[in-house]
Amino acid sequence: MTNEKIPSREECLDILNKNKTPSNVIEHSKTVCNVAEDVADGLINKGIKVNKKLVIAAALLHDIEREKENHIAEGTKLLKSMGLSEVSEVIKKHSLYGIEDGRVQPKTVEEKIVFYSDKRVKGDKIVSLVERFKDIEKRYKKDFSKEFEFAKKIEEELLQ
Image (cartoon, rainbow, N blue to C red; front, side, top):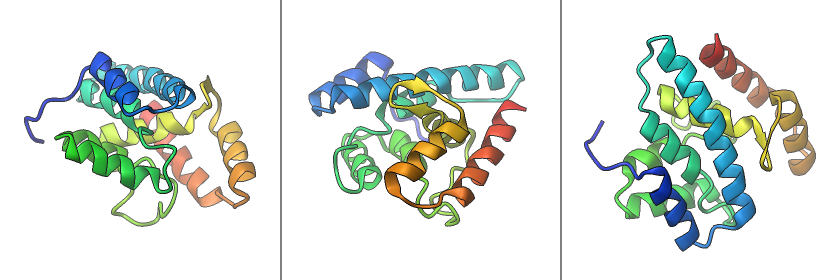
């Protein structure tokens, strides 16, 4: 862990607005952040160490480049260029693609929280993993059963 500054909630919203991130994406990110905070609080209450400030920043900024082709790589690059490499490392791990590749799998508790929270939010509504994955499969016309199983495992780990 570095000692770099992690932006506050207000600074994250300011970054999203200055980047002209669409309002529907910002609303999605705020809801993801609410889920992430609840999960983080639950873990903290069990005595698990969580960098909540990092979780909040990464949850708010995870889709900053949502409108771009490879939004995760683009978002990671943008945040790194702003000196937010710790946040960029967390958002780099919220993808479903290549989930079997250890390099993109969420490993830290913060990465797992942001990954999981994103999979619980459809638009700006909190839904079950089942509902979210049905929507993803319909949108991308692809089978995401491996990814669903992975997300279920993370859910069990975080909410046990």
